[in-house]
Structures are given as C-alpha cells and as structure tokens.
Length: 169
Image (cartoon, helix red, strand yellow):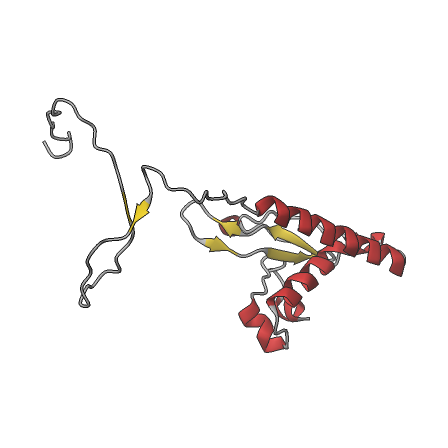
C-alpha cells in the first residue's frame, strides 16, 4: 500500500520504499521490508525497473519498482525504459503456486547473498618479517589516532636521480 500511495499518473517505474518512508506506514524492520518487496516481486505484483547498488563514483542507488498492471513511461535520467503492463501476477493461479514462487524468490535471494560474501583469509599465529608493530611511545595530546606501523626492508643500491614530473616542470 505504501508504494501504491506514492504512485501517480506517470511515475510507475520510479517507485522506491526506503526504510525511513516505510516506518511512516508501520513497517519497522528492514528485514521485513526487504522480504515483503521480494515476495511482491516473486508473485508478479511488482517488478524491479532499475536495480540499485553502488555507482562508479561511489554513490548508492535504491531499487526502483513498478506495478506490473500499469504502464511505465520512459525516464532517461533514471535509466527507466518505457513498457506496457505485463501483468505477471496473472500467471499465479493458486495459493500453492504463489507459495512456490515466493520460495523460489527466497532461494534466489539467498544465492545472490552467498555470492556477495567475501571469504576472509585466515591469519597465521606466527610472526614474519612484515609483522605489525605498535609505536613505542605515545602522548596523551596526540590529535590523530596512532595506527600500527609495519616493518619494511629498505632496498640497498645506488641512489635514483629524481626527475620532476611533467605537470610541475
């Protein structure tokens, strides 16, 4: 209902429901909101018109949704393509079919989440030449937090002549 209240005559496909807005409609949990949106998409009432995520310049974009029984008008600034009503919800004939569609949607979401997990490297308990060391002295009035330093081996050899960069020359 929260998405339907946002829908105007021409903004189908440009609908989003962040948790801050969902709280005004009584949805308190991010997990509940995410699950409800996935379920609505699974049974064909909603479809994602633009998948969110991080952009190349580091900004975050939300998923944009469309109701499948309304027309979508093109919005190039938000990468939304025009499309006619698709009515995917009509494919669900029985309650059992709806439950199966929701189960498949949950399995696909779990698979996507598993792909995103980053495997962490196990650290060995032994020390090496590049072990992390703490500074020996600190003062109470230091402005910056002291970060651990790393031991490094300096290369021995003839000094390298430093040439100025083209931009500074």
